Image (tube, helix red, strand yellow):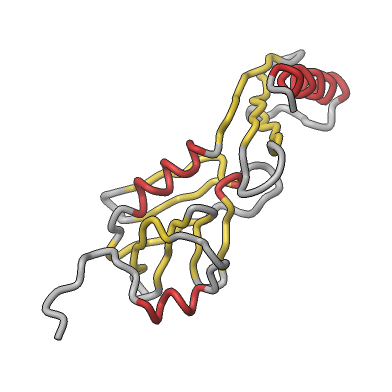
Length: 163
């Protein structure tokens, strides 16, 4: 008979429902207000019908007073995700750590006009670095001068990192 269960520990039946990849390690788990589980693995944030690789998250924020985890995407990845957790466990800290750990290099580039872009090289589960260009509000990534500045910076960083 189990007298206690550690908070934030994922039950075996919940693990099976999440469809984790073979060898994927659960690092932290949190229970949502509807009773479903959300887990941070070595590869992604995973829930029922949800799989967000760490390289697709531009910013993660924990709102403790509301018990809400907010994920903002890199451009084009997904819409903002907000999840209310009844039992967050170590999930908020783990999400932040995994998002930050995916970043290998980041630099900011000023572009003509107001603002700039942030160039981010991130390590996914497998393969080469994934390069992302994150614009400041109001910066048009399709503008020739912006695209040219971003491409030149990515090429320079690739050369510096032997990519």
